[in-house]
Length: 222
Image (cartoon, rainbow, N blue to C red; front, side):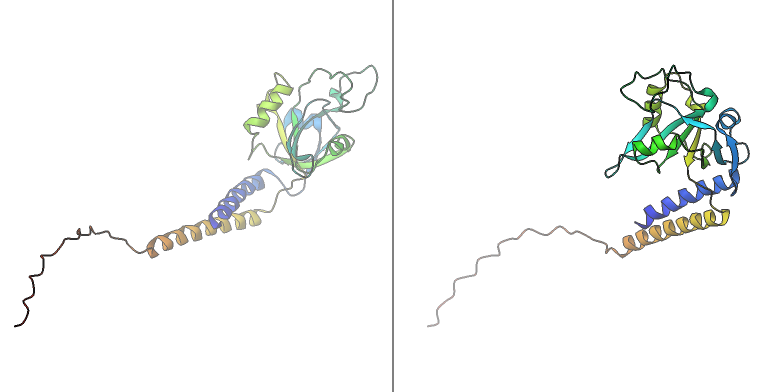
């Protein structure tokens, strides 16, 4: 248990240290178009404005109690909205799905737990998060599903924004890292102590039993 917790804290501490050098405590505000075109620059902590959710496929990880545990939602700038003859509801399955369009910004969120929350997210004027390309990437299953939904998409050029995540201080990140390494050290020490305390076992071949010589008959006293 200590080893697992120590490893987790160490990994998290390393990630946060890397993010602390790429992100400032105060976010920068930029449009979705600017983020898609130029990236976050020297501050990965962003507030993104002028965006819309792509009307198409998004990836979700199912949850036991709610619909979604985590979602990956493509967003684009307002200027990239395809022209429509008449408005229709977002994710209206009764309507023919429009051809997939490309995107350069992907929102990863553990806060959008239902379809209604994803739809409501489209009406938000802005969202805050961290661009995490520096420390993380899409797993193989998410990558496969996005490529199926958006044929030809170049996911290496997509900026991943973790929704509602903010950077922690460098001091806190160092504390997590040191605490994790300390727990790993304790786990190793306990393992060695347990191995040393175990008594050394030795095995000897037992000699097979043998019958002794028959006792001489007893002479009766006369």
